[in-house]
Image (cartoon, rainbow, N blue to C red):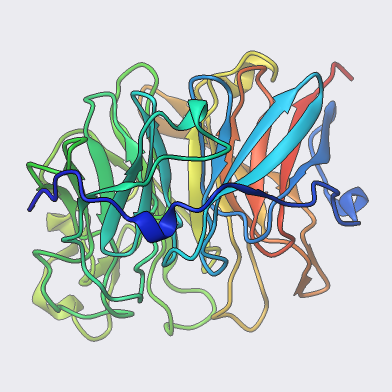
Length: 366
């Protein structure tokens, strides 16, 4: 990819503004958690989407429709919420690396240098690349740095289901921190909005939101495992482990693709996922996966709007269960989980773009 060296976006570098930190009234008593766990509103963040953690403990939060990037700091138990960038185009993805904050904004990846030392007046961002597709359909991107030091950037499909330009869409790419050396890591991925690396094996795991308009119960959404580069996960020909696409499936044998590690319920819209590496939660949760399910829209009876937990044994899924639910009441949602983030104290943050908050889930011995 073309590297746009040291190009400044002066118009995007306004002095930081602050937002009201008072949390809205939400029916948190409706949230069901395992015994010993509790949930609270940690911060009021409009359109809160994906999250990342800075070296000094700053929680950075992207958005989709709001166009803002937020920074949340805490001092002596008091949290301060700053808008450090605004008027961006779908700045959904945020990633922290070597003191800099990386932000995805559709076709562009921006970098805010020395960000934790300049929160009140960030330096103008630099465009490290502007070569990603400009389409807004699946144009909001989750981004994260892998253990190999590369920035992983997904490119969702340009349609619900189609064969259009599969060399440039429906994939996970990676680039160097300066925007150079673009390469495709995985193909056949319709739309991943969350991924993480196993703390021990360093293998990539990612969620994938399957196609719409195949009825209420097909196809399943997915949690996938990429043990190495170059794998093809089947989109647009196959969905789940063996669901052949009604329009395109006849062109390919589903056995030729990598099946998901586990099938999730259809239309739950799995987004952010993280391996739990903290010490606050009971030992059974260690190195397991928490998945935020944003919830269905293409289904007569809604489903999702919850957190799932997946336990692994030697890279195989041993157990899957609902961890937190209650954002959906009588087929109406009052909240939609988007992303999860493990904090240094072991608590789990959960972003919610519908309620406009970030929750904190903690554990106390029951």
